[in-house]
Figure 1 (cartoon, rainbow, N blue to C red):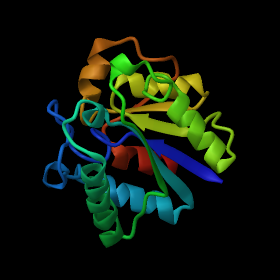
Figure 2 (tube, rainbow, N blue to C red):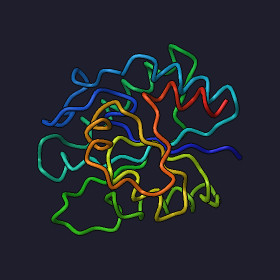
Figure 3 (cartoon, one colour):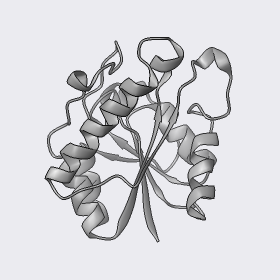
Figure 4 (cartoon, rainbow, N blue to C red):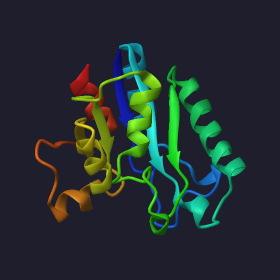
Length: 176
């Protein structure tokens, strides 16, 4: 089974320092949906692993998160793509849970659900915490320069072996 793990905000859709709190605020990064469709067509299972602390902060609720994801699923369907599963952490950093990236609990759950060894599996993110979570499960960290990616790259301290691409479309092109 070919598997790829994607962060959501800053990788698939534009990010916001004020959080994506409604379906209207969810806007895809140009080329990202088509990249997912190409990965699907090449036999990849596309899974999202996303921190969504806006829930824990009371900025939006589960029905709103579901509506945001429904918009994403519909937009993907229009270009022939799909996301196989969405894993999310609703907690704030103060909760000290095991699922919030940079911890690896959420990604470990993906391994369990899919019965997969994650060694070398592409894990695409725009923040250091995405990359650190990937490294903890021996996945291959990919940094995209969309979202917070350019700032993440400029800050340095990336895990050894991190691959850097301009956007998700470039990641997909390199894998196909």
